[in-house]
Amino acid sequence: MKGSVALVGAGPGDPELLTLKALRCLQQADLILYDALVDPEVLKFAPKARRFYVGKRGGRPSFKQSDIEGLMIKAAKRGDYVVRLKCGDPFVLGRGGEEAIALAEAGVEFDIVPGVTSAISAPLLAGIPVTHRGVSPAFMMLSGHTRESWSPILKTVSPNS
Image (cartoon, rainbow, N blue to C red; front, side):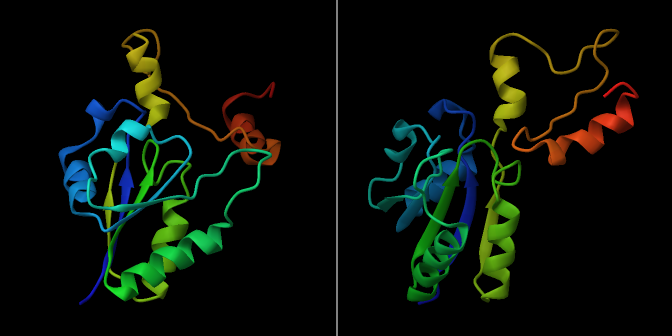
Protein backbone atom coordinates (compact mmCIF):
# COMPACT_ATOMS: atom_id res chain seq x y z
CA MET A 1 0.00 0.00 0.00
CA LYS A 2 1.42 3.34 -1.07
CA GLY A 3 0.84 6.39 1.10
CA SER A 4 0.84 10.05 0.22
CA VAL A 5 0.71 13.49 1.77
CA ALA A 6 -1.60 16.45 1.29
CA LEU A 7 -0.28 19.88 2.25
CA VAL A 8 -3.58 21.48 3.22
CA GLY A 9 -4.47 25.07 4.02
CA ALA A 10 -7.03 25.33 6.83
CA GLY A 11 -7.95 28.92 6.04
CA PRO A 12 -8.07 31.84 8.48
CA GLY A 13 -9.60 29.97 11.39
CA ASP A 14 -13.31 29.73 10.68
CA PRO A 15 -14.06 26.07 9.84
CA GLU A 16 -16.74 27.21 7.38
CA LEU A 17 -14.00 28.78 5.24
CA LEU A 18 -12.31 25.46 4.46
CA THR A 19 -12.32 24.48 0.81
CA LEU A 20 -14.29 21.41 -0.23
CA LYS A 21 -11.03 19.73 -1.23
CA ALA A 22 -9.55 20.41 2.22
CA LEU A 23 -12.66 18.90 3.80
CA ARG A 24 -12.33 15.74 1.66
CA CYS A 25 -8.66 15.41 2.63
CA LEU A 26 -9.51 15.65 6.32
CA GLN A 27 -12.27 13.06 6.00
CA GLN A 28 -9.89 10.60 4.30
CA ALA A 29 -6.82 11.22 6.47
CA ASP A 30 -5.11 8.49 8.45
CA LEU A 31 -2.82 10.99 10.17
CA ILE A 32 -3.04 14.75 10.60
CA LEU A 33 -0.01 16.82 11.53
CA TYR A 34 -1.42 20.21 12.48
CA ASP A 35 -0.12 23.65 13.36
CA ALA A 36 -0.68 25.93 16.33
CA LEU A 37 -3.12 28.30 14.64
CA VAL A 38 -5.47 25.62 13.27
CA ASP A 39 -8.88 25.93 14.91
CA PRO A 40 -9.58 22.74 16.92
CA GLU A 41 -13.08 22.64 15.38
CA VAL A 42 -11.45 21.86 12.01
CA LEU A 43 -10.07 18.60 13.41
CA LYS A 44 -13.62 17.37 13.99
CA PHE A 45 -13.90 16.89 10.22
CA ALA A 46 -11.36 14.06 10.52
CA PRO A 47 -13.15 11.48 12.68
CA LYS A 48 -10.92 8.49 11.88
CA ALA A 49 -7.53 10.21 11.75
CA ARG A 50 -4.80 10.12 14.34
CA ARG A 51 -3.87 13.70 15.20
CA PHE A 52 -0.46 15.00 16.12
CA TYR A 53 0.31 18.59 17.08
CA VAL A 54 3.50 19.90 15.47
CA GLY A 55 2.88 23.63 15.82
CA LYS A 56 5.45 26.31 16.33
CA ARG A 57 4.98 29.31 18.61
CA GLY A 58 7.57 32.05 18.99
CA GLY A 59 9.83 31.61 22.00
CA ARG A 60 8.40 28.22 22.97
CA PRO A 61 9.82 24.73 22.49
CA SER A 62 8.67 23.31 19.18
CA PHE A 63 9.35 20.65 16.59
CA LYS A 64 12.21 21.20 14.20
CA GLN A 65 11.11 21.56 10.59
CA SER A 66 13.25 18.57 9.61
CA ASP A 67 11.48 16.42 12.24
CA ILE A 68 8.06 17.39 10.86
CA GLU A 69 9.19 16.51 7.36
CA GLY A 70 10.56 13.20 8.66
CA LEU A 71 7.21 12.34 10.28
CA MET A 72 5.36 13.00 7.02
CA ILE A 73 7.78 10.92 4.99
CA LYS A 74 7.85 8.00 7.43
CA ALA A 75 4.05 7.83 7.72
CA ALA A 76 3.52 8.07 3.95
CA LYS A 77 6.09 5.35 3.30
CA ARG A 78 4.26 3.22 5.88
CA GLY A 79 1.15 3.58 3.68
CA ASP A 80 -0.72 6.35 5.50
CA TYR A 81 -2.59 9.19 3.89
CA VAL A 82 -1.10 12.14 5.76
CA VAL A 83 -2.61 15.60 5.95
CA ARG A 84 -0.19 18.35 6.89
CA LEU A 85 -2.69 20.93 8.08
CA LYS A 86 -1.61 24.54 8.23
CA CYS A 87 -3.41 27.75 9.08
CA GLY A 88 -4.14 29.94 6.07
CA ASP A 89 -2.39 28.70 2.96
CA PRO A 90 0.52 26.23 3.15
CA PHE A 91 2.60 28.22 0.67
CA VAL A 92 2.10 31.67 2.22
CA LEU A 93 4.61 32.05 5.07
CA GLY A 94 3.86 28.45 6.03
CA ARG A 95 6.94 26.45 4.99
CA GLY A 96 4.82 24.43 2.59
CA GLY A 97 7.44 24.93 -0.10
CA GLU A 98 10.12 23.42 2.12
CA GLU A 99 7.86 20.47 2.90
CA ALA A 100 7.06 19.92 -0.78
CA ILE A 101 10.78 19.80 -1.59
CA ALA A 102 11.44 17.31 1.22
CA LEU A 103 8.59 15.07 0.04
CA ALA A 104 9.73 15.21 -3.59
CA GLU A 105 13.32 14.40 -2.64
CA ALA A 106 12.08 11.40 -0.59
CA GLY A 107 9.99 10.14 -3.51
CA VAL A 108 6.69 10.63 -1.64
CA GLU A 109 3.62 11.54 -3.64
CA PHE A 110 1.93 14.70 -2.45
CA ASP A 111 -0.84 17.10 -3.28
CA ILE A 112 -1.11 20.79 -2.49
CA VAL A 113 -4.49 22.10 -1.31
CA PRO A 114 -4.51 25.89 -1.17
CA GLY A 115 -6.30 27.57 1.67
CA VAL A 116 -7.77 31.00 2.11
CA THR A 117 -4.78 32.98 3.33
CA SER A 118 -5.21 34.91 6.56
CA ALA A 119 -3.24 37.82 5.12
CA ILE A 120 -6.12 38.60 2.79
CA SER A 121 -9.12 37.16 4.60
CA ALA A 122 -8.53 38.83 7.99
CA PRO A 123 -8.94 42.37 6.61
CA LEU A 124 -11.86 41.23 4.45
CA LEU A 125 -13.67 39.70 7.41
CA ALA A 126 -13.26 43.06 9.17
CA GLY A 127 -14.83 44.80 6.16
CA ILE A 128 -11.54 46.20 4.88
CA PRO A 129 -10.82 45.54 1.19
CA VAL A 130 -7.15 44.87 0.45
CA THR A 131 -7.61 46.65 -2.88
CA HIS A 132 -10.20 49.27 -3.75
CA ARG A 133 -10.47 51.19 -7.00
CA GLY A 134 -9.31 54.77 -6.61
CA VAL A 135 -8.05 54.19 -3.07
CA SER A 136 -5.75 51.19 -2.87
CA PRO A 137 -4.77 49.69 -6.24
CA ALA A 138 -2.35 47.15 -4.77
CA PHE A 139 -1.19 45.54 -1.55
CA MET A 140 2.06 44.05 -0.34
CA MET A 141 2.54 41.24 2.11
CA LEU A 142 5.79 40.86 3.98
CA SER A 143 6.97 38.63 6.78
CA GLY A 144 7.74 40.72 9.81
CA HIS A 145 10.09 38.24 11.45
CA THR A 146 13.37 39.93 10.58
CA ARG A 147 14.30 43.33 9.27
CA GLU A 148 16.52 41.62 6.70
CA SER A 149 13.47 39.98 5.14
CA TRP A 150 11.43 43.12 4.52
CA SER A 151 13.81 46.06 4.53
CA PRO A 152 15.18 45.58 0.97
CA ILE A 153 11.65 45.30 -0.41
CA LEU A 154 10.44 48.46 1.28
CA LYS A 155 13.43 50.35 -0.12
CA THR A 156 12.27 49.54 -3.65
CA VAL A 157 8.84 51.08 -3.10
CA SER A 158 9.73 53.98 -0.82
CA PRO A 159 12.94 56.00 -0.98
CA ASN A 160 12.42 57.09 2.67
CA SER A 161 12.44 53.56 4.16
